[in-house]
Image (cartoon, rainbow, N blue to C red; front, side, top):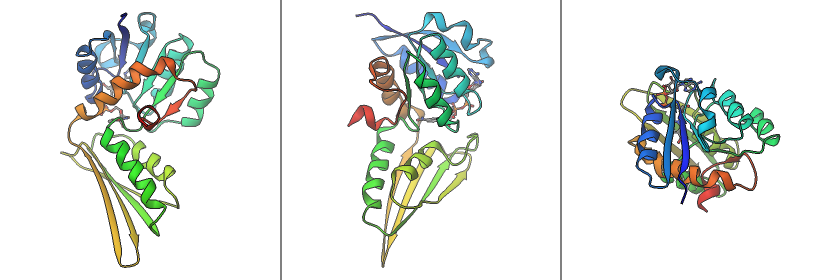
Length: 219
Ligand SMILES: NC(=O)c1ccc[n+]([C@@H]2O[C@H](COP(=O)([O-])OP(=O)(O)OC[C@H]3O[C@@H](n4cnc5c(N)ncnc54)[C@H](O)[C@@H]3O)[C@@H](O)[C@H]2O)c1
């Protein structure tokens, strides 16, 4: 079996470091490049040596990185949130390589979204409170925006940014004399890694592109 050659964009960041460790620990993958301005390595210089790029960078760089990957015929798995999804769809339409995007790679978050969608069909109103570490650049989170998009009705989102937090979300639903709270917590960045590795294994064989949401690979 030929190992999948994986480059990591944003390799020096919080998520990037976890992805580097996960790829190094996967028998069917080979880490080829760690691209990050903080490491003095630029993505464009290293694309020749990769089958798949995993991007955990910044909202203002993820789209340009994805375009560079597609131009080089390299598949891309994007975890970065807060960028223009419409422009991403346009870029994907004209490309041979595939894009997979997940606002959240944790299985518990995918389940939380699924249960929230189901609950929204039966309860009168809902609101989302998403809570993240204070280094997060975008608000609302990609997970909260994706959850609200999938749920029925107009779902307001409240964002909390505090030190000590990682990634957490509550979907609170209310109806006459009752409420339902669905809560998901990622306490460590390792929670996202099985989902990231699954996407790396599957991105080259996607039948459409972009695919948005880990639920499309799981269910
Ligand atoms: N999808 C998910 O499951 C999930 C989970 C957690 C975080 N995120 C998202 O992942 C992104 C990264 O989060 P983080 O906490 O690791 O951020 P971070 O700030 O710790 O890391 C970002 C890294 O990207 C690097 N970078 C900036 N521009 C770059 C470029 N052009 N090419 C390559 N690298 C570049 C930075 O130097 C930095 O090291 C955020 O958008 C966050 O919301 C997604």
